[in-house]
Length: 169
Image (cartoon, rainbow, N blue to C red; front, side):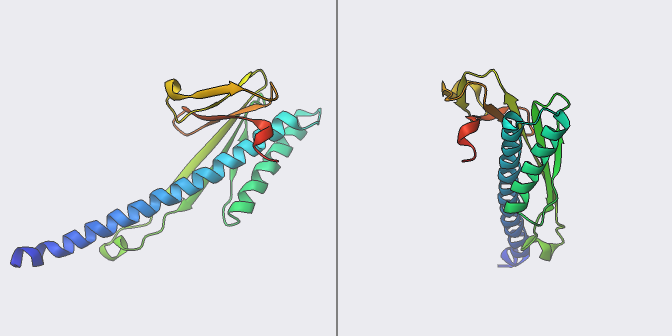
C-alpha cells in the first residue's frame, strides 16, 4: 500500500503529460492542415493568376494564402514565402501548445511550429496521392496538364500531389 501511495503522484503526472502530449499532437496536425491548405491555395493562384508581373503574382499568392489562414484561424499570423522563381510557396504557422493536466506538475507550454510547402509543376501529366512513401503512391492522368501542385511537409518528402482544378472550386 505504501508503494502505491508513493507511486500514485508519479503515475498521475505521467498520465497528465501523455494527455497533454496528445493534445499538442492534435494541435500540430490542425496547424499543419491550415498551412498545407494555404500553401496549395497560394500555389493555385501562382499557377492561374493572369498578371504578367511576377511581383503581382507573388502578392496575389500571398494574399490567397493569408485569406485561407485567416478564414480557418483568425488568431494566427502566417509567414508566407514565395520562392524567387515563383514555383513554390511556403506557409509557416506557430502557436503555443495548451497545457492542461501536466501543468499541475510544472510542465510548461511548448511552441508548435509547422510549415506547408506547395510546388507548382506546370509540366506534370499526372496527379499522385502519396503518404510519404514513393513506392505507395497512386497516380492518374491529370485533367489539366500543367496545373498541378505538390505538397511537401517539413521533412522534404512528398505527401500529396493534386490537380489544381480540384483544390478550390
